Amino acid sequence: LTTFLAAWWSTTHRTGTGGGGIALTVLLWSGLVGTLCGGPLADRIGRRRVIAAALALATPCLVATFLAGDAPWTLPLLGLGGAFLFAPFSVMVVLGQEYLPRHLGTAAGMTLGMALTVGGIAAPLLGALADRRGVQAMLLAVSWIPLLAALLAVRLPDPASHRG
Image (cartoon, rainbow, N blue to C red; front, side):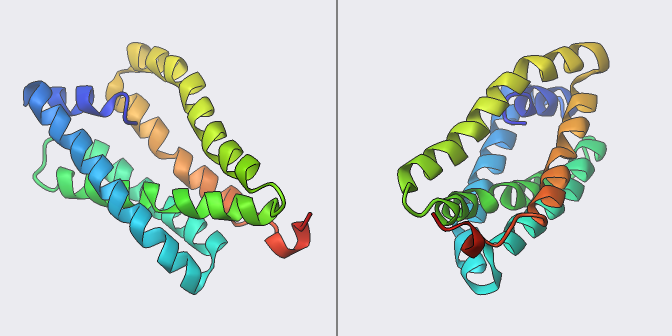
């Protein structure tokens, strides 16, 4: 998403690279807000619930963003999608540490490392999809990944059953 967003934005909105940079900034700043809100919310309602709900809510926001074209509400939708998309990141690290309480560093490293590694591996494949079907089609396809992750998150076991 972060790799291709600026290119899609500047083309769709005819803003040039500056507009693409603004869109990427909105996504990442709203992601910061989502990250800051995700932890306290998880403390109140539970980690797995926050992960699943935030990821499930990210998908409609992102899909609507990429279908809205150059509508004026595209940037707020992108911001909302970014907040939901990034809200579970710190929560997932903590949940990983709860699964491996005697290996906190390993759990944190694996949680973040796997996310970055999978993204890095997927980028060339997504680039090939963008070359064949267009950047918008690729971004729409990527927008459904959080929903798939949400469906997996609801099946996560209780961390108390994985102590050790």
